[in-house]
Length: 515
Ligand SMILES: Nc1ncnc2c1ncn2[C@@H]1O[C@H](COP(=O)(O)OP(=O)(O)OP(=O)(O)O)[C@@H](O)[C@H]1O
Ligand SMILES: [Mg+2]
Image (cartoon, rainbow, N blue to C red; front, side):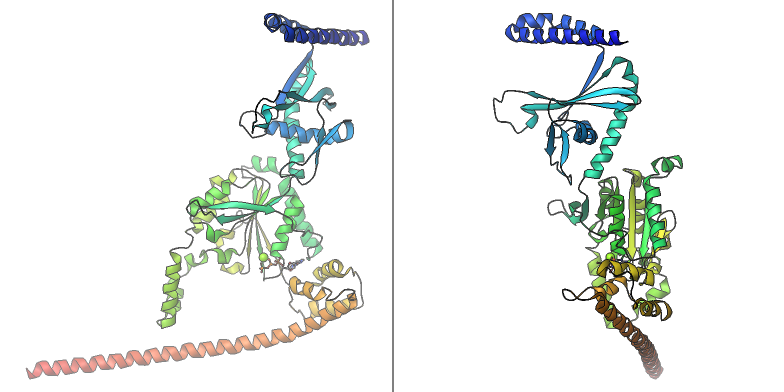
């Protein structure tokens, strides 16, 4: 075997020398050289046992770097940084860190299913004769993959796919994540378009104040989703999952979305429904979202008049009344409607799980709302919004997370009092308010001081809640009395009108009789 190997090596180097001599010869005598070219090619391919594939940086579309080249660059970056002796460091657009790749003319080996392959980074330089915007016109870079003839099947059928897949994964991991929002375009006839900034929200599941068990459940649900490409395919469902986050303001719904995005390393598309003119635009926006992303519609109950579609007649009559204020309000609303979004409930349902929703895959759709009861049941049924998560007022466990995050305090004798207030007295305070109270107000303020401030605030909140309940009851009573008064007034007016009518009729009848 050793002698065979040696023979190949010797043949290889002899051929390489021959090729080198031929190349020099061709440069001196180009016309004669061309004549011999087919012969040399045939000779070379007969004895040379290796196959080469090249992947050019720019191919096909101008100005666009080839996806294959970028994928290979990412794939090789993990090996290059540890094995290649000469490295090149680049900042690639959209990448959050430096990308290390092997320098030109470097070679590294890779193993796959017991097969060895060689990767080489190469550059073909042209002498610059004129100025060009097209970078590849002067310097054409490419990767060259070399492998033995006998491994052709493994390489073509499996290895290249493996490289592309791994490369894509590394690329996605390295990329700078983005926060997209849809803004109405100025020059495109009110067409709304995605624009983006870098997504830098620092929230994580560790900083999220919530019971540990609930957090773990959500995390494992997310992990299961992100690894279930084949499962979704098997059951014939588009690879997406819907989450409905509901709860009062300040309970961490938006924070949870940021934590989810950071956990899964997804981009976020914050969809403002009111600026989407119609269902077609909505569908276009959906098509333009990328894979591995969370599409968010915040405050879905306020986004559109989706809830109004199932209002019964009685409710509408009640609302109408006949007082001037109500009529004015309605007129203003109709005026506004002309410019308002024409996205319908069915358009939105189609957005979530119509045929178009399957393109791209690996997407999470999140709705948030303060009032879950206001939403149309069709919108949030299981299958559309697969997981409903209630974000509620701060419990003791959630408080402990905040105390640790804000004050680095994990234990204190004041905890018992806080536990009593939150669990026994059932004082309702949002994590946002708890956090605000825990935040040191001056440099060096003691943790204990902040905890005491929180206790005071909780007690105040209790009093405040009591006052609110009384106030609400009073207001409700007043409203009912007012309604009653109005009804009586209306009935009185109607009775008066009826009386007048009768009187008028009688006079008319009398008049007719006299004639
Ligand atoms: N569960 C929580 N864990 C950690 N911080 C929280 C939590 N809830 C609220 N906060 C803090 O309170 C602030 C407001 O929270 P957030 O915006 O997530 O609330 P929200 O539920 O989305 O409110 P809204 O319904 O008004 O949109 C955040 O900046 C965050 O710091
Ligand atoms: Mg929010």
